[in-house]
Image (cartoon, rainbow, N blue to C red; front, top):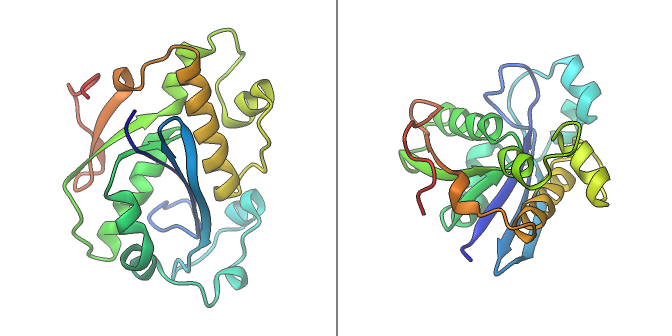
Length: 191
């Protein structure tokens, strides 16, 4: 089994080009080996809807590092080794791509990723939907929804539960074009 970097982002507004919180859970050898959550100063405005959704206010992020500082200080090392994993991954991959672009950070052009929504549909087909809270409730996973740390850890546990059901992660491998902010076609199932 490879190394998987499971992550979740919370955003300050509907542009989704900045993050105000990121949660990460690293999966290695079939278990979660590291988990952390960080507040991020998005250096932009917050929308009332987003604050209502996740409860993170502009005041809560004051004094936190901006994305560029957090990327250079911690995230780049973690994200550079392994396959990225997220629940409804195109959203989180787009936020990551837009944050890299907003701060002029050149990391890599493409990144491999897996969407646990797609994995869970195969692993747990009888559920009414495959939202993070529905899956967490069905699998007995504790969840403080819209807290990026809790969401990332729940996603990691869903990922592991899907594998336990016989779902092969490699079959769901995609590649994300970080420069164009889109999933590349024709790369399914590699790896």
